[in-house]
Amino acid sequence: MVDFGEKLRKLRTDKGLSQEKLANRLVVTKSMISAYENSVRLPSYDVLIKIALFFNVSMDYFFGFNKHQFLDTTNLSEEQIEIISRLIDQFKQK
Image (cartoon, rainbow, N blue to C red):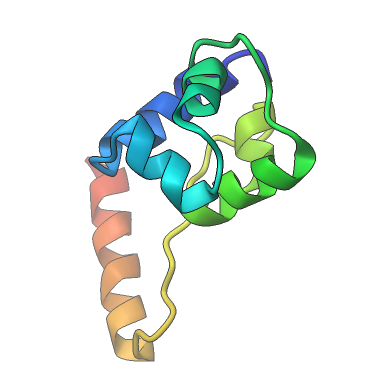
């Protein structure tokens, strides 16, 4: 998890969250989020799971084994999922 802090900061800022808002959602302190992002500390296993679930990424994403993020398609119809899949394919071709 060499670049865990960088990955966490990018996920947080991409979602438009402050450190404080993310901390509240994960039930940790703002200083803990800062420590994670600055690579001063690594989260416990339980907090790492919360972070992965919150940002909808795999645990492998943080370990560097998997560079992929996942889209949450809960409550979408099969037709909507298919449209999104085709759009992703189009972006990959460019």
